[in-house]
Image (cartoon, rainbow, N blue to C red):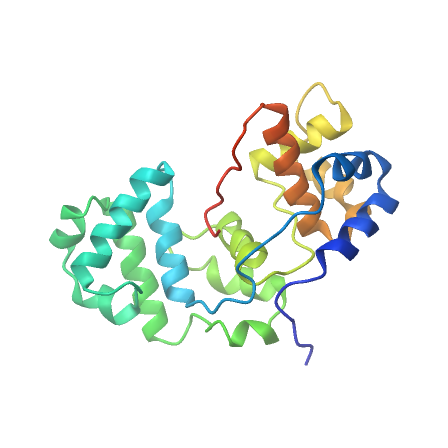
Length: 223
């Protein structure tokens, strides 16, 4: 059984991408080698997914406020299946959690109690596709959310979130396209970036930010 390590050599990956894709290489030279933190930090799957659910469709500040209220309500910084099962719907609503998100949290807790949610340690023995298949079964968890976990929590080197608008916008700027590439077009475009499509996607985000003249880095949900 293959074991998947968390994280990869960012400098080696940047060199590989620069050699394979000259256009991306020029941007890498301009932006520099990225520094990614968090791959060596422990995390809990239920806590991470619960936070992803709470962050959906909200600004970072608003979501952080709601998460803080939930933490105060359950009396802990880590959201667990047991704490979610104990808290009442009315309490979650008082925290600002919508009905749909409450139902998603309930489904997450139930599946975790039934042993359907892999622990962080278990992920090392699972492929990207296996992790995606297991986690998208949870209400409110889509492929993009799992891809962010694969990239920012697990440090998987070859993840390309082709539905992400920032990645598509970055690819559009990279190739000087009139319109953004479709997800299918981006899949084909990204083949040259393997086996470091994760880093290529991160550079696409930076390219999109640079193009928009944003001075501060955009915070992703799993960072």
